Amino acid sequence: MMIKNSEKIICITNRTLCPIPLEEQLEKVVNSGITRVILREKDLSEQDYSELAKKILGIRNIDLTVHSFPNIARTLSVKKIHLPLKALTKEICKEFEVSGTSVHSVSEAVEAEKIGVSYVIAGHIFATDCKKDLPPRGLSFLEEVCRSVKIPVYAIGGINGENMKSALDAGASGVCIMSGLMKI
Picture 1: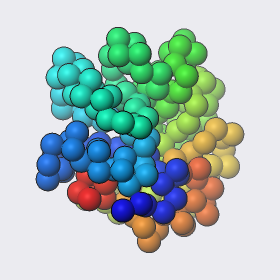
Picture 2: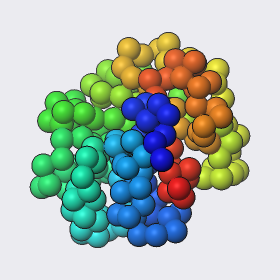
Picture 3: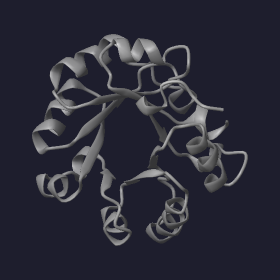
């Protein structure tokens, strides 16, 4: 099954949501046309993350971004990194072909752009089970972030087939999906 607008979608991993091993789940995701993947497995040790990343790199046509572990990205020759804003430096941004961070305010997006990131992920836009206790920031927040920076902005949080267009219409370059892709 091919997913419409798959080139505008980044898959964010969470293996605890998968009904099958993450590697098999990601093969299904890549076969659907979504090749850009951020390996976001926050609960893993650096060694366990490295072992998982090696397996994921074996998936044909995957475009992998390492999350939180620049040393693993270097070791595995992965040219894309996603780090928390507080961990980013101009040097890291220059070292990697693509660098990104997640932002939760306009000021964070502006700061990230000044540091030199290639993109930001802004959220959470819609209600999501991942952040049940927090109200969504909404499309007006997304529009504001998109207007405040010149780099691509990706929307995250409760994104699905019905609301993806509204995020793109608000100015997002694309969207990030976790739950919907970890369960297909």
